[in-house]
Image (cartoon, rainbow, N blue to C red; front, side, top):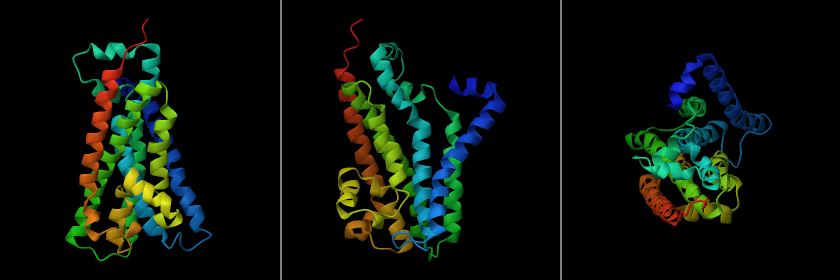
Length: 254
């Protein structure tokens, strides 16, 4: 329904998508401005940082397209309109994900793919079948990890009722920090986004394997291929949190 309503005004959709593409592109423009003054960032060259950016932006773009509307849940809980979703013969999580579905978010994915393609052509890497396979594997696992964050953030809103910005701090904020190499952050911070909130498996760890760089926190080499397992664990935990939040819902009482 939302896609059909969007495509009725095709010119408006094209302009909105182009605007979304430009706005998201400003993130990479910031990185380009940095490299206009320095040769490396935390010991990483521009193509290597672009690889981090492309993996993070594309993975997050897919998750944002699928579940980016989860932040409307807090408002629906507060005004009582969430009740209407419970009586429909469709999974509640799917309804929330489709609520106000914004096809314009394809702009973020397109921009991430362009940067990723340029990075893959520019980095100095001896490609092997394992390294080539790791790129799509990391993209799929990264998208699943971000989807789990969206779902977990939505589950938290059952408790907080309107905490969309808290959710955004981990989703939008998470993809922003992953656009920079782990060497620019403190060791304790890197430890936190590796073991507590495993965002490092979206791009830091796979990119380290592809580029032949030291792993964050000296992780074992096999962890480069652990992203799907990490994504599975995150999705299971997010699903448990969502079910717990859904069971605790008591409506507005009006």
